[in-house]
Image (cartoon, rainbow, N blue to C red; front, side, top):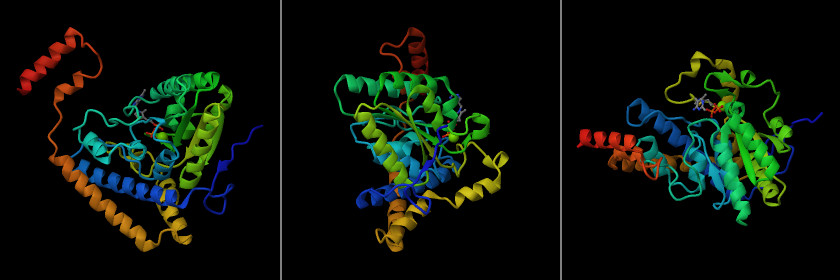
Length: 343
Ligand SMILES: Cc1ncc(C[n+]2csc(CCOP(=O)(O)OP(=O)(O)O)c2C)c(N)n1
Ligand SMILES: [Mg+2]
């Protein structure tokens, strides 16, 4: 019977050594702070009607940020709606993320090697396999990594993607953030499997559980998966155990379904506090330096929001332009009607 230990690098239960270069640790911390600051700011803006519905990743910063730091910029990233942090690390300017949240950008990803954020659950997983396989056929030494949640593992696309990836030995990483909930559905109602990582076994894919609030473990796990993929050893399913401390989106009220005691337990495991403490203890970043990073992040986000608010709104007819090379007459007629209405 295979066991599924939780891979850890930080803390008393660590089962591997810290091999993350010090400057990378500091950069991961800075980016985690930026993401937290951005999420908190955006929730406020949404309450004021200045941005649309928004899915924050508060509590998941270690998974979100450290995973993307383990990739090369040449790798492909296939994000879901919550993964603006990973996109930012991969090279998407934060301004794009803010514009996207304000409905002022038609695509978040721009010129970087990332797919547009996937709102449908898990539909981007087969795409990631395709990207990885295509890259391999073209002789490129890159991987594709798909981000999705615990809920995504119940979708057919997840299973089809793992099956294809296993058979093709595609250089792909399936990065599952198990944040405890799929909106109001807890993981124990999502699956009868004791772990999500073990689902890899059925497809001949390497599976691993990692402490998703341990930034260094996440980084090392993704790095190792990447190296295996590039060595032709096939795909990896990583289950990063983390927790969504905030709402599913700004349209959600978790107090209606989530026990407060559970939230209290996970709040004590805040990945940002944990990494901050680790860096301070090792003399890599003092508390004063951490406070300065926070201050800079706040100022930077405020400036970026101001710039985004000063940006003119996107042409609403843009929504008709990206599905078909040659839009069918019905869509063209709708586009024209809208054009006439807005003048
Ligand atoms: C195919 C599909 N079905 C249903 C939905 C509605 N929906 C949006 S988010 C969500 C829950 C997803 O949970 P999980 O995969 O755990 O990701 P998380 O939101 O926790 O990051 C659902 C059911 C959707 N977007 N796409
Ligand atoms: Mg979830």
